[in-house]
Image (cartoon, rainbow, N blue to C red; front, side, top):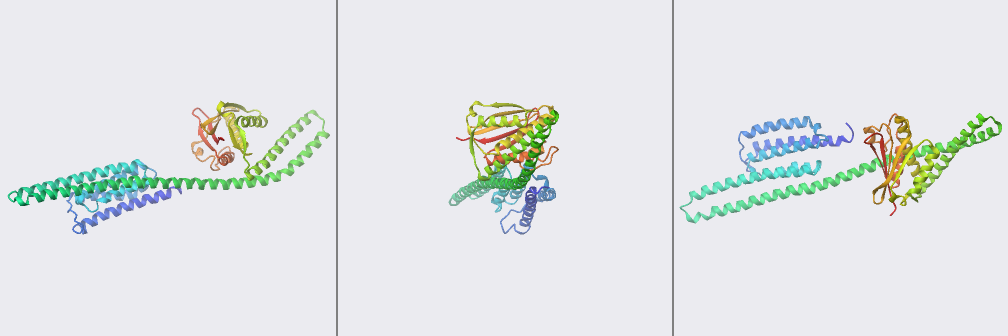
Length: 436
């Protein structure tokens, strides 16, 4: 059981205990408080109903975990609670029972724990039961008044009183019915709205808590990266001196080719280290620069061609976004390149070709959408839920590159979504706000 399910499990157990208390209340009222509260002496039939309800209460307490994260089963149990309450009320006085308002209890619970449709359904069911009890008690009173009227027919002076009394009781029952309906609607609408707001607040707090944990991980990774980058500066400078010295001491063609490759690799390391320093300064000072989308795509293409010349990129840019402006910093380009590099690697592992499709358009009038699609085997469904939010273990690594990219996009006001493609591979969808 996960930690997130513990509160829900506790609430289910409390609900099962509440059913036990309700059943005990019904038994206690019948045995000890029938005359005190003016309840009708119940028939023997109610005893069988209470025995059946006792079995239901025991079952619901023993197997309360079955309704965890199952709205349909939880609604069914609340519907049964409503049926048991309506049956008990019918046999102990019906609409005149002083405890008829307890029919509202399942409605209140469903408004807090279930989607909006559930309390409305219970409100309709409870209103139907209460209406039937009102009609039943009204017919009983009308019959008793008619019998009383027939017995008093010779006494003309007393003939008006029973009709007036019947009219007053009818108005009283109608008022009781309206009061019940209004109470049920208030619970359904008001409590449901408050519960929805609380769930939204809890979701926001959960998101903020996850974002804080993610930022702490990013801070730890950034601190370690800065320390390692600082430590790499000296070895790189030493290797640069050694390769320059080798150029003057070796003149063999094969050796010169190897030295040239070493120099290219060193150049790449030095450029990356310099970009890391600039990115660190830009992020620390929160420097944002305006850049046209077509210029961003051109820079991205140039960098990929330089660092990954074997990549086969298929760009598709909507004409209406080429001249739009995005706010960027030094972290945006490495974040996009990391996603493209992952796509290239996935395509190469699956189809032995470095093919990646990049579609750029508008997801909203002022929101840029960039879809990076690879041709790999795809990402497992259970990893799609956490990849980009947390570090996860997979055969290819721990998802640190995607985590860093996600954080970079969020800092710029964007989002990163991962989803499987209908044919093969994975789509990484990046959204960024556009300047108005």
